[in-house]
Length: 372
Image 1: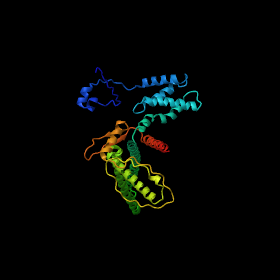
Image 2: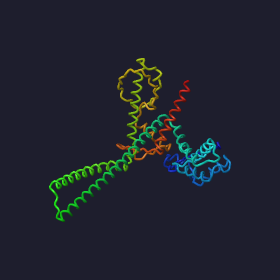
Image 3: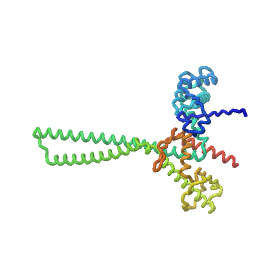
């Protein structure tokens, strides 16, 4: 009695409308008052970094130009995160100290930026569950493949333009020869029948080649436009990711069955495939197709359990939503019957894949140490 409770909610998503996110009864009881904290401006970020540098190093160690560079690198990250700037400042100072520099140089900042820019991303990846991390790694792998396809489409576009340019040059040369022949004819010169036939054959061959190049150019242009303009082709969709996930689950199950068969035959130590199957509690397992085993003198490495043993589409989409809540991916498009959503990474695919693999290896080493 006489006790009053205040609830403080913190939300970093500026686009969130709390009145729409909560039930009407909860909103009415909460009576929330919004306190808006605007994102840091570039001037504020520079001031904070300058004060931290003043407390950390002697005057003159960080020149104004270097501080401006660190500020620009901080504001250039998306989303803008002050922690990236603080970590970059720290790493730049440590790198300069290891190199026996009397002051921090732009080269020190550039070298340290590679590690500092993924500081926030590294923290997000380390907080994911094994299934979420495996799914994020799969999305990064597929998006990297989409990027490669985009580059190939651009190369095809450039080759198409080159072929069209060559076709225009050949057409211009043909017109020039025809013009010269017309002038010679007007001046009363006659060409031999052999020359006439040669000219006609050459012209026919060139026209056929131009038509063929034109058809190829049109087809390549259509493919290139579809790849670049259509986001559903440029980025993996939820349906494509789920299909690939099912393939990976089946591959993992086939590998396990193969190692189990080898262990029963005495060709592999039982410990090599004794990792516990984490399971997924719901969903159907893949087809139990026997895999023929070929005896070999090599000892396979212990199999690392894939986080998914089976997965329903509903559970899969819940994990996608979880990754979206961490601001790791973006989901575009309405999920409905016969429709899939376009999935886009908010960070570089190469960085995401590298950090996911590193975190997986780190946790694997930790589990081994615990078993010992």
